[in-house]
Image (cartoon, rainbow over all chains, first blue to last red; front, top):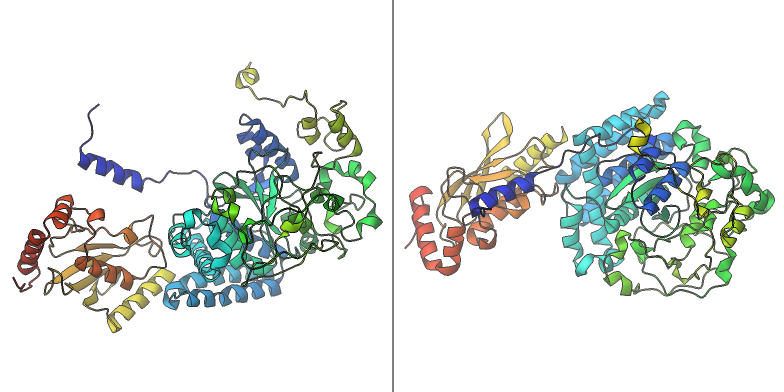
Length: 475
Length: 157
């Protein structure tokens, strides 16, 4: 092969620099069945196949997003629309606008950022008037975010805010940046440029700086190779859930949006509001949960908190801020559902309910998941400089804290590690037993029974998932 | 459109309080996206006393895509192509490094500072960069001569 001349090399380099793969599909897709994601992984690594199949049950709907920032921003505006509370939208509009002071503080000129703020305000206004019109259809939002110029403008505003927030709160992030990169440089290479996708640190800063104040929860569900049958949830916000959760599905390198079973959009707004914060798996194993759920006990906060807290030794303090360590296995609190109350939407109406953000309190687990925070070594040795963790409250109740600045609140790390090797899903006594003894018979959950979507199949050592083979189906 | 407003504001600012040695005007009053820039060679550089004309072009996607800056006046410089395009290589103007928060005045000031301090490692003219590194005196001679010849400068030699 002839070596290329430097001029040719340069030309190729230029072409390569300019190359942008043509990705099919819109910036923000319509809601679609999460089965499509499961299908993508049907023949992939078994862990992925298992987890995506389970995911399609727990979170039947998803949106495929181009661009990570879109996921958060669209999710944010979509929730505001679905909550249908004009006052909330007004409040958020004012709050986001007031964040412009951050931009001033880092020396951005108003002329520079004005157009971005305006675009965001316009989005709020659109939502507001849609709510006032009584519009139920969110297609105007889809349109807004599928217009590249519009979505770029709003995202850019969010980028500015994220970048400013990081620069103004360096103590929260600097220790986690790869190779001791200064915050300034991180922002100018990873946050500010239009073409960059967000990484874990940036996402945490976006959530801290922009989203947190809204009261919305942001949860990432990690699809990774960590052990377990379900994706690993990790909540980025610290506020007590009250309004709903933006759920992101993380697949290595990308974030999409996820919606729980009986997604908020199709429901009565107020019911939504209650529902969206729950993390229940009731729709698919209702009948089998009932045995260990006592609805009167359930109304006692933390009643169902994992009592293993009392058993184990405290962990070393994990790093603060963004690295509130994702539990590699979803803690059981997740499944703390009282099925005895038929529509899951209502069950949270009682204010004394333990809220799902309990599971943020669950200590990190042994399985290191390949989540992006793990990449940089410094964080492994980093100990938050300022504070010492107070002893965990006897009953760990979630403390809603909005921390826009100042040292990060003591981390949850002083909580002991949980000691279970058992199943992560509290399906039923039978499931647990059969798992522990590695015995058959197959556990059967009510709505799914022998359906391939029945999660419980994976407890069966002999279970083989269905494989689609093209030649078979064409015979 | 928000971007037009922003361009108009940036232009107004640049014309009201122009940075040192930089004059900006629209190439054509009806088009906000083509700017004519006059840049004085900085002191202590071989371009001193030359006045260079540059063209700054804003893409319709501005500020999401970077502007392009090129020298209309011929210039002997490692970071400017030595052809009729006079394209300039500025890291901050590459599509993947461009930040929508960058201001055009900063772009132009950076371009001017590049005249005083070329960046041979980012050169588009490898030969000139090599000469700049290895035979600074000769490079300065030629640059000064070109400045006199093309940029109307009366270079002191």
